[in-house]
Length: 288
Image (cartoon, rainbow, N blue to C red; front, side, top):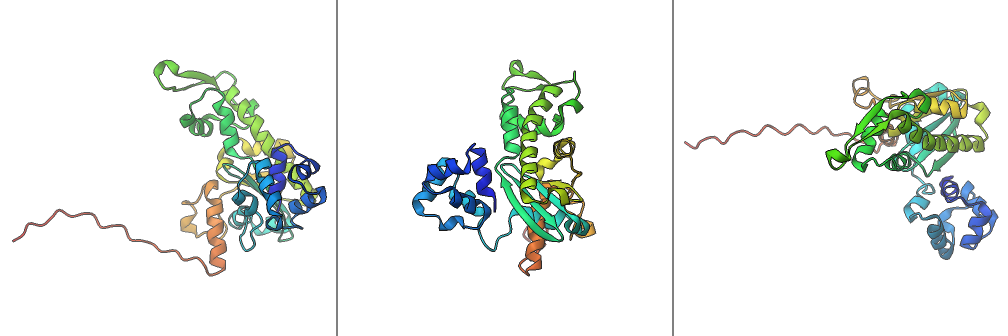
């Protein structure tokens, strides 16, 4: 899989630089990134240096290389993609908190998977630099933010509470959107590069399907259209979901969870047990 490549790019390193830093060859790094060589076969000393250089944990490095476990992007696709999209070509982009997962489908086959080590938390950190208290960042972004600055009002202010009434401050929505757009553009550009690296950029008739909690960010689909030049739609879980349950999962944030349940059900490993509501407590009856 391509998670290692994402961490290397985040660190601003070439394959040759990473190879020198951990004491291996560039060809080995290339093979680790492509999946031709499995990360768990890396000599212990190199693996320890790799974690230190990239500042990542064992779990993050090995997660994309565990056999028998579907990456989040594939599980998500099970819940959001239509049959025609899988057949004619589409890229599923799941924007999460810490990472963004990409899966490319063509002719009903998963052709490419990558994980970009950047997600909504990077956007939140940038908003925090505007002196916005951390507890208000997410709600401010979702309620008033936009991923495209020129679509935000130029002269509209929003007041953000501080620790005290005196510390409250006014923020222009255009300025907030400018900060969001800068980091969201980084994510979109990384996604576009992964799609190009897949070799299927010119074959995705249905473009990009955005999902994940951060797909709810206002105008994020428009930003991806501008950056990638592709068709973009935002999706929540629909495929394989009973009609009466669709409203309950009509949120892109639930797509991966629903996809994992669908994959488990296919393998006979998923059972849903409805627990009856606890009976209302009754007042103690007087003894005779």
